[in-house]
Image (cartoon, rainbow, N blue to C red; front, top):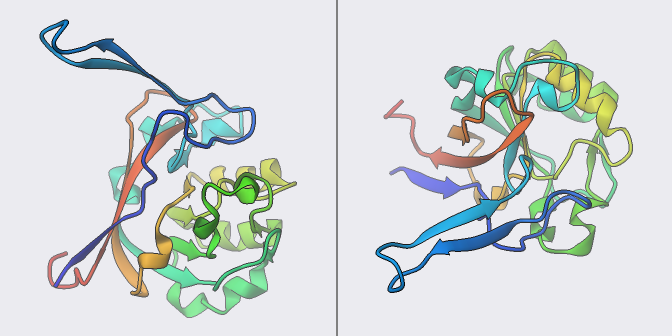
Length: 217
């Protein structure tokens, strides 16, 4: 039997965002019964909540989120479980080597680190576990199509270098993934569909994992 798991944080008025990023604001522009309908204006940054980074995010590169192929955003994903990593821990290439047999060229990956349990805590955006430059090279060498992480970014101090190493390959980088602790399977069918924002550096993304989908896809 299929089990659907929502891996997306709700976008809410005043929700936590990366320090210095655009605040999320909801404004009602029309309200019943004063008007015939309810309507709203929403302000948020392109990297709000669960979101995708495009190559344009970290480089002089015109590939925005609208340039990703649907084939990269929808398909089977391997779930690699690193347990509950400590604040500022670093995943290195040797850690990824443990999963080498499960990571063919062109794979989609979700990395479980336990960091999602710290959502809404002050250190969520500052003390998260990182991917080393060596780990980024490991992933790039295998031409990973999509990488999903619970953390809000790839590294606490070397974010630009690691972003470039990953995004330069055209990899889909999916950050701040919610509810990964609810995944029990080693492999899921994944959909990660960003807002189709033309030419932009990132976009909030609705992400769903399906367990037990072997007979359907």
